[in-house]
Image (cartoon, rainbow, N blue to C red):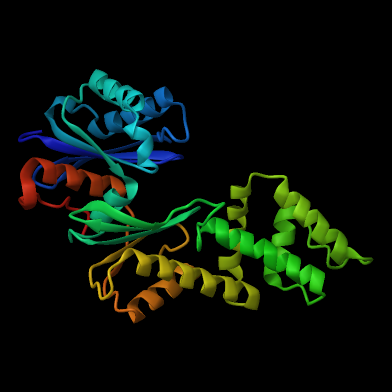
Length: 323
């Protein structure tokens, strides 16, 4: 590519996405591969998959034209291990990518994909939750992010756990089993058992407890979509949505200085556009004077722009297909 290019990569546990962008902002190629996060996969396999995604993005083009590469990684601290970082760098160099490589968190890359503003806040709510203060396009501080055992308030894990607890409360207190409880029972046990007669409430609650404890705790996140599905017609689901939005808004508040007006960028399945929690959260943030609330969808392209800034400075053109 005349004038060179930059590379951005979004490295997740289930998928890896790479983009090659010319220095004039033109997206020259995209590639993907299976999950390349070293927190989720053996280091050599993770590095191989990241390299595969980058190779697919270059296609027949020469990777030697790359001027800088930014890797956005969930759980970025793993890459601070010199042995892990060395495996990745060796794999990229064997492919032919000889440019400097910067490793950042996926949240920093996602923030850059949503806004050109240098300062703001990222809220991540997927399986877990965390709010990150961004200053100069880099992580400055965090709120939350303690994991499922100590926190993750408002996350898919938290919502799923509340759905199961709400179902247990309904079964034990004798109230009518609503749509959410019926859906949870069907998902966990294969039937809601409402019509099976006998002392089904006690036996069902015991079986639900046993089923939940038989799986890794994080598997509770699989019940979160049931809350979204039934939020409009089930009071218990609606309450969980409201509580999750309150908790996530609190995370944002704790991550930002009082009176802050910079953008808030949302990331993750729980808060994406059209979701009940996402819409409720936007309402709360706007009411709290967070005047710009955005959703990030392409962390790889954000990473590429951060790479361009390393090469060209503040005048780097944003890739053409991001705001």
